[in-house]
Each structure stands twice: as structure tokens, then as C-alpha cells.
Length: 277
Length: 265
Image 1: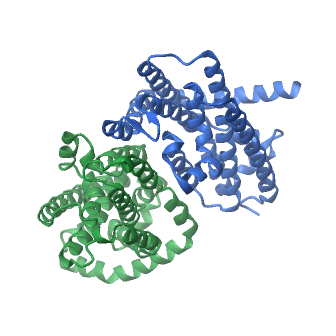
Image 2: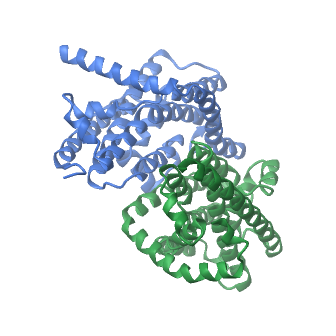
């Protein structure tokens, strides 16, 4: 199946493009079936609000570095926004399919399962956008002057960074989810990933408030490009030139994870076949 | 009295099953130990960052806030080791219909599902929390007074009752809304806020964390008790609140069980 990504080239690409709209529609309908779950899942994202409460209490006696109360509010609202928009459930779906064997019928279809999954997860984005729209209003009210509404260039960078974050997280989840073919505890690995991400992406604390060597190290790790970087560009904490530079780094991470995900998928398929036959 | 002995024996049987399951995966012991340290570090990092910038936050000094974190870690270990596994057991049972087998057994259903699963390795997280508590009092340069310790332990009881009641409420919800794998995630994510003293929160969040999801009673009050800052009136209030919460939970559980029609019918 993975041949379709490489060898047959153009025909395969046309094939995927033809099937994609239908897959998106299926994904959209599927998500409507589980809307209660979606709301519960949304409520689990309360950590940025708690951190916002904490830091605004701290900043009541004066700004912390570049961050005053308004900056903290904007930062954590941005976090919430990006986290909800760019999240996906791929890792849970993949591990379940691999463990329960429901991956097998997917392999019979003439489209790479990762493409099919990407359509399912992308289809959830409009609904996610609707759900976060109230946040957007609060963000505008709290820090409107920080948003790049009148600067198309910065706006484009921020939106690209958010789209890149979606792709990067999707690919990371694909890698960790595929590991389920090799080890039993793929979900525990993802838990550890989330723990590291909470610190190194700026989700818990803005990276620039961490010790300088941690903040520096985070620039060479993928975590920051999933949350911290898109948020910082969105609320204008980053200059245009350095944001452009970091878009490049993000693209590198995306390319690297794409290669790794496809290679791992190939290896996993060989093992998966061995499971059944 | 005989009934009590009967249930004590049942509890021992259930715990032995979980223990047998756990020792099958001895290697997990090392892994869980490493993970316990990892999560403790993640819990401490925001605290360290905040207190590297300020001497005190909302009236709490660093060692005092550490007491709250230590207490939080201890409770979290109890939650992960004794509460969440059973929660997942029930939610799965409701979806697959296997809960019926439990309900058919000649013992109180609430007791059976509450003791269905334990994860003994969580004792490591528990010890980690205790270590933080000891370090916090070392930093303070004094030990908690005997009276304060007693009040603290009494409030530990309240915290356990509250945890358990909240859990029963969540399970009751799972009877109605079947597809709720996410409920345990939600529970844990809200509980995470308990690592901060309640005084940090203002307005709506503070109200929610005191009355609706009483985190204040679970972590801040016991920490204040250990620090000798809690008045007796507050301690009594906490106990009353805990008991009220427990009776509401038991009532809701009974109602939910009554309405439960199993996945097959």
C-alpha cells in the first residue's frame, strides 16, 4: 500500500485527490455522531485557563519579563485556541486499529490509511473552529491590538504556523501510533510525549520564562513548533524575520517526521501481516 | 458485624487479584518508578518557575506551596492507583454490557465496582508525594505540630471521601451517556488544578473549585492544616461539606443504577 506514496507518483496523487472530498464528508458526519464526546474533550483542555489564573495573580504586582497581565491572558487564550484547532485523535485511533486488527479492512482500500486518517481528522477542524470562535472574541477583547488583523503578512505567517503545527502533530501521532505494531505501550509513550510537550512547547509556562538554556534547547526540539511558536506569532511576541526563520525550522521538522512516519509505517505493515498470517 | 467481616474478606480478594495481575509485569515496577519521577518533575516545574520570579504568590511562600504540591501528589497517587482503574472498568463494562455480571453478584454493587481494580505500583507516586512534603517542612525548618498533623489526617479522610464521591458521580453519568472514554481524562485534567493553593484563583474558577469540584477541600485545606493555619471551624466545615457531597453521590448512584437498562436491552 505504501507504494502509492512513491512509485506510481502522479496517478496515485490524482487518485487521492479524487477520493479526498468524499473522505472529508464522511469524517464530518462521523464527528457529528460523537458531539458529546467532543464537548467533554474540549473541557479537558482547562490547563491553560488555570495557568492563566495563576500568572495573572503573579503579574498583579508587576510584569514578569515581557509579560504583563494582558500578555498572559493573550498567551494562554492563544494556547487554548491553537491546541484545540490543531489537535487530533490519530494516536488513539491508530493504536486501537492495530491492536484490534480493524486495520486489515483499511489496507484493502486503494488509498493509504494515513491519507484516509488525515481526511477524517481534517474534517473535524471546521467544528473545532466553531467551538473556539467564542475564545476568539475574548482574545480580541483582551488583546485585540496584539493580533495581526491589519498586517496581512504577519497574519499569513501565523496561519501558516498553525497549519504547520497541525501537520507536525499529526505526523508525530502517526509515528507513535504506528509503534503500537511493535510495542504494547504506545499510548504510554504518547503520555510521556505529552508530558515533555507540556514543558518544552510553552504550554505550561512561556518558554522565555524558563531558564535560558531550556528555552534555547527547545528551539532545537519539535515541541515548540507544535504550540509555542504558532501562539507567539499569533499574539505578536515574535518579530517577522525570526518568525520566517522559524517557519523554515518547522517545515524541516514536518519533512523529517513525514519521512520517519512513512518508513515506520512500511516496517509496521510487514509486522502486521505477520500477525495475521 | 458479620456483614462487615464479609466485605473485608471481599476487599482482600479483590485486592489480591489486582496484585497478582500487577506482579506479572514486574518490569513495569522500574518503568513506573521512572515515570513517577518524571511526572513529579513536570508538576514541580511551573512552581519553580513562578517562585524564581516572586517570593510569595497570593500569600503563599515557596515551601508552603510545596506542601500543597506534596499533598496533591499523594492524592493523585491514590486517584491513579485506586480510583481511576475502577472507573475505567465500569465505563468499559457499561459499553460492552459486562457490567451486568457484576450487578448480578450477591454483594453491594457500589462496593464491587469501587474495588474492581487497583494499580499497586502507584505506591511509588505516593512515596514521591511524601518526599515532597518532608522536603517542604525541611525548608520551613520545623515539623508540623501533633495537633495539626491530626487535623491534617482527618482532612485526608475528607479528601478521600470527596474523591470517591466525585468518582461515583462520574460513573453515574456514564450510565446515561454511554460513550464516555473521555470522562476519566476530564476528571484528571480538572483535578490537576489542585496543585495550586486555592487563593491563586479568583471569581468563577474559585467558586467552581470550592463548591462544584471541591479541590480546595482536597488539597488547600489539608495543607493549611499541616501548616497550622486552618481554624477548627474551617476543618468542621470541610467535614460537613465532604459528608454532604458523599450522600448526594450515593443518592445519584442509586437513581442512576435504577435507570440503568444495560447495553443489551
